[in-house]
Image 1: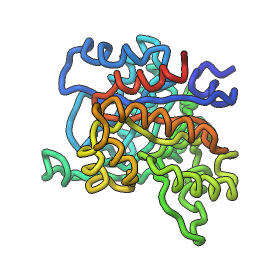
Image 2: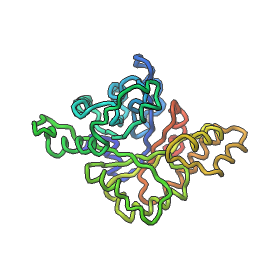
Image 3: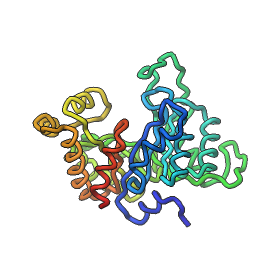
Image 4: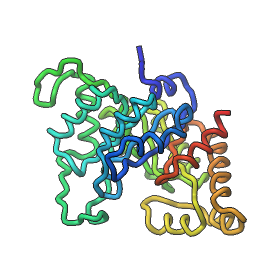
Length: 298
């Protein structure tokens, strides 16, 4: 019996919407609950970022637990950067004990980009290693050392992806490896180019990726043309078409136009076979994301 609403909706073939929130630089619980309250009963789950921008924030595990307490399904992000395998295994047990059932295993920003560049990166396990560990807990009910785990975690395991302009040689090898290690769903980086995404999804279908794992495409509300240009220049794998940038520049209200563009792209992506949902991102844009999702959940 599945008691994970996010997993249940995907397995029930519902088109899902996930959102994202960033832990505050604070210990005040209400700063978390006030920020995500607008997404309650709209987002099917909320990702909690882990050391975003390679900076310290309130623990993602703690924030995920607080979100769970107000009956919002969290997706706990786990980076390879900050913990060795012992700490990762302990956090996995802790998350399950707190009734956090979804995880997303990611590489994490490099420390050189953060505000403490002298920090030593750990990266004892790569992303495949974290995925494999969570899956080993689920399948074997043991630590990798062989010790048994009483009431072992059975996570719904997520992996990251970035749709890009592919050539004939692209064989989905990295995605296949992640699925073999235990990934149940993928969430992607921003994908604003519908043509690139369509071609990419066609290739994923050819290799049966979207039959073996659920696929959620990343989007967001672009604040302005200036912001779009910055994202194209500074964020890996981002390609915001010139037509979208021009549309923002020509609008009388760039913020509202950004919401319209996001909604229109979702409507297109819903028609692409193999897309099981949308993952909406944006730093402190929970209210704008809620507005977008509410358009589809009237």
